[in-house]
Image: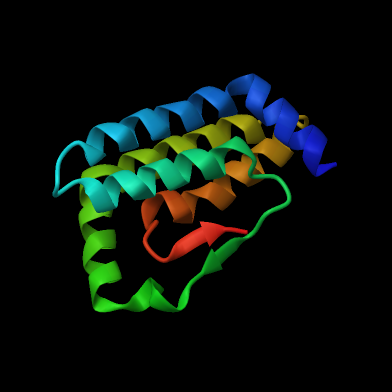
Length: 122
């Protein structure tokens, strides 16, 4: 079932969303200061290609002072917009019965998009 969900996800926007994350991440990596944020953006892009069948996992470093600082910077500069897009997409998809599984995936991606340092899908 995960394979079918991921395939439909990719066809109806997941591929282009993931590609957007990766292109943005490459752009951020062009600056020395943006490299940690670019790496997280690329990670989000790869996660966005196949979210079905995975769960959010926190690493032990998720609450380290550096991860907290980077998450605050990320949330202020990029994360709130990405999280708002995932939330809006989830609300719209919930309006249809067919879209509910995809809305759940957007809600799963929301915390990783808002605070990506120390979190991933596995």
